[in-house]
Amino acid sequence: MPLLTIITITYNAEHFLERTLKSVQVAMSNIADPTLIEYLIIDGKSKDKTLSIANRYGALVSEIVSEPDRGLYDAMNKGMKMARGKYLWFLNAGDEVYDCEVLKNLFEAFDDDADVYYSDAMFVRDNGLEVGRRSKFTPHTLPKNLKWQDFSLGMKVCHQAFIARRDIAPGYEADNLSADIDWEIRCLKKAEKVKFLDFILCKYLLGGVSVQSHRRSLTDRFQVLRKHFGLLPTLANHLLIFWRGFWFARKNGKYW
Image 1: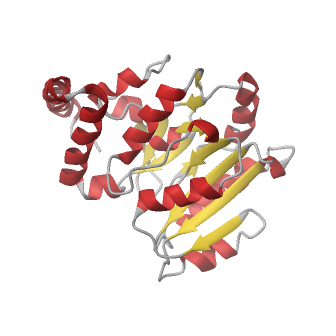
Image 2 (image 1 turned 90 degrees about the vertical axis):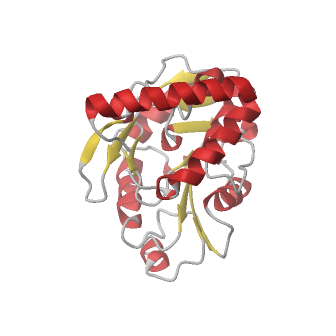
């Protein structure tokens, strides 16, 4: 059985997928036993060259599934059902393993047998230019002792920098653009041991689905936080979110 399953979701991702595949390939070269990693590509029936690019990496990719789906989180649910690894890591098209040492360091960290591992993420633009660490580039500071209550003011850890045991991972709410926040909170509620990684796990490509549909994403986020924290605390916390964002943007310029 693999120790880690990496899942990449794609749809018409010909411009960005190869950077993801190459980053995984380079990082896996530092693993003594590559069979400990399962790599799944879940595609939404792409109409461009996505599949031909993926097929060029047949030695790297364990399985490719291409069929219509109901969007990103529906595809993620599909990937989780297929996964056999002890841990799950979602690394979508355009995102990258941060450097060649990440998987080696991650496997050493797995000796602690934690339920959740998390780290910072490096924001990059579509030309590959690094923008900065998420914890510095946004108002979301990164705690060293993460708890689900830390999400009261929104997404505390970038989804691509959050790795969870498969046996505690719930399904995603497929129609909610903030389903990743809900998923992390629910993982943390089940987790008995959470470990902060002192190295960056990933490069995160700016401009995902929630950014492209920002207004709906905010509404969906409110519904997620209301479910976990209650109506009145969520209303109060959203005032803090907007106030914090206003002052952060005023001091540092536009973020995200």
